[in-house]
Image 1 (tube, rainbow, N blue to C red):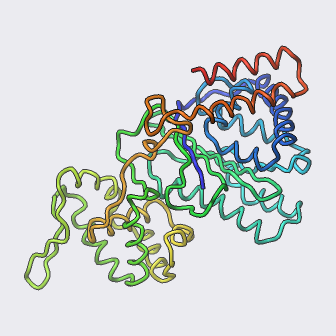
Image 2: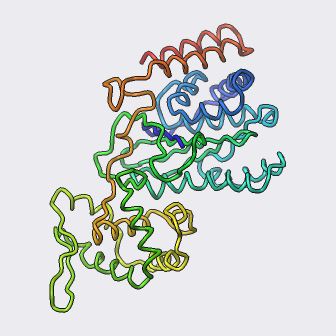
Image 3: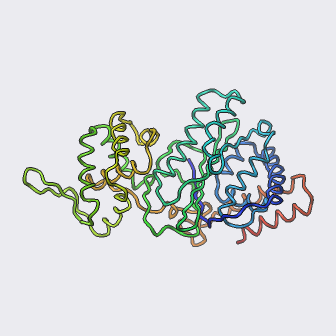
Length: 388
């Protein structure tokens, strides 16, 4: 599994019709060349690369770094292949806002059209749904998803491009997923992150390797115990959630037993989790369901209907504060850049990958059936993108 994230400003304007039509026209030409030269699976793999996706938008004339690139480029590509999906072997489902909710229905429709086995269609829908759940519930970074597009090929390769917004920061963050080596949907499925800035506010990141013990203990708690024992732990946390005490303790048989003592720098992470942790009938009902079904893995836990950010926060807090299994609060954007960082953090720029991306897009533009002037402008935009 590979995924990347991009962060950029949140815009509110509309794409001019003339620009959208140009993007559709050039997009169709480029996609036809890329599929003919490299195959549909390679195109899907490229879409999962956040830098390549950004560069494709630049080539098609959406040449400013804003949230609109994601929604407009996805819509333009979807329109570009309308009527020739089967010929190209590429299918795009979902989109922005309410259209994103139609993703399962559209996947199912294409599955029927292509006579795909029910199991394959189910897996595509499952991967689409889980990618959205992971970036909503497991990565709680303050960005609310409002765009979800699912790309897949007739051979079964798939990619997800979804985007969330943070109204307070007036910024957006794009999440990329790919079926390449998709052996784990939970643990650090990142390909890389391209971000101008990192979150100063602490983020709960349950996909991080540092959260492994917390995930494991959470799974054990809901399997080995029962609802009533879990709720005893929940009540302890609810009792202390409104205070900033550095010590969580409980009285047992007239003896005060310290469950966990937190240093000041450790405790400052917990207000993220105890926020909205007051008594909730809905949360209690979901926890009853979890304890009753006893999911055997963290992925199965997340996949359950009704499991969302609040449930994940509650179980994570029980595992950490009551039992000492720490979770990660690092913004996932700090891990890596898609092509490396110019300051060699977390690793030097991968010049070979950069050059390959340039050459693939440049080759596609040169072979497209468009006017020479349009080709020249597209190549100039591409080169300027990578130079800056």
